[in-house]
Amino acid sequence: MKRLKFTDLLITIMIGVVFGILMKFWDDLYTVVKPILPVARQLIYGMWFMVGPFAYLLIRNPGTALIASIAGASLSAFAGHGIEVLIYGFVQGLAAELLFAAFRYKRFSMAVAGLAGVASCLGSFTLDLFYGYAALETWALIVKYGLRAISAFIFTGIFAVLIVRALEATGVTSLIRPVDKKEYTMLDR
Image 1 (tube, helix red, strand yellow):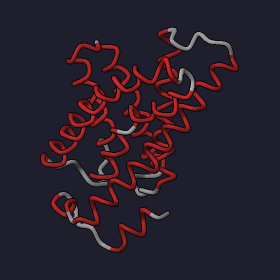
Image 2 (spheres, rainbow, N blue to C red):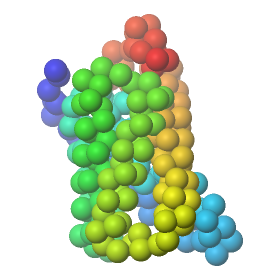
Image 3 (cartoon, one colour):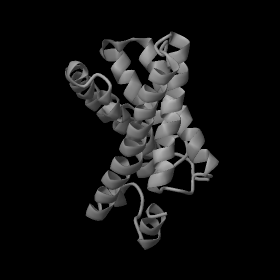
């Protein structure tokens, strides 16, 4: 198992910071969409689960999903969303990290990345129950969190993988890790 180098750690934290900024704008979009599409807006919720899996797909070292998620949540907490957001970042990053660990950090496919997003969604759901945010009837919970899980899979499994593939195709990622045919094939599993 590879260890995080200092440059990996810096890049991972920067990914978290960039996503922390993106999440602020996404929060504004989510607020605008709320009155227009009160239930369907859950389909754009997956952005909040994307940072950890994206960082792992890019860096491919154990710990990156957790660190990036905490970094993104830290920026959000610092911007005024409170310590609660930091707890969510930790739980969501840990859930994604555990999923990647279950595959022994050797799978980088859309399916595995998507499942990491769904795992983050489940971690978030657990906290929502704890904080009382999920005090809904059973059918409403199934609809709300079912749509969030779908969104999590789309954002982390499809969008994150496609963005990483695009970065790899440009050669930009060769600065952090070499890209060869074998790695492209691993993404297609």
